[in-house]
Image: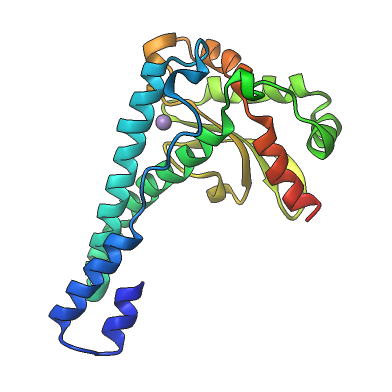
Length: 229
Ligand code: MN3
């Protein structure tokens, strides 16, 4: 963004603009967020090995490839290369989505000793009861959605901000929930890389267990900010 403004002002040569633009990109690029707990802190629900691979390899790859695609986009935009700009969109959506989704996922989980698995309270608990009947009902609905999702993707508890209503939704691949117009409260990664080393092919067991380390406090905070600002 900064580079476009700089080129627009026609200060200095294009070469200078690119060089300075590159420096801006370096500063503005996305980076891997730190996990708010140790890799092994969610055991026995999710092994430390899965967590470290998932964070250091998988999430890192989305960040790296997102930055690469954004850098290519800046170059393509500067050159007014319409084909290149359009052809970069799927890499931006996939890797940017991967970065967005995993950044939420790490905060959606928390060790048992820090409140993992403790049921929601307050306005969110009330909304869940009103809309789904019980906490168990929404968990079952998410587990069923996650188990039935073909291939790779995510199952979410989201908020429709206009209707102030909760929705259970799935997204394919790394599509973020905002592609369905919803604000994510909780998301569960159902890609095989999230569970295979420990649960093998039995995704329903992973889904059943993950609630033991679910950080409902995170969902509550987002919900309350939106519903009672
Ligand atoms: Mn993942």
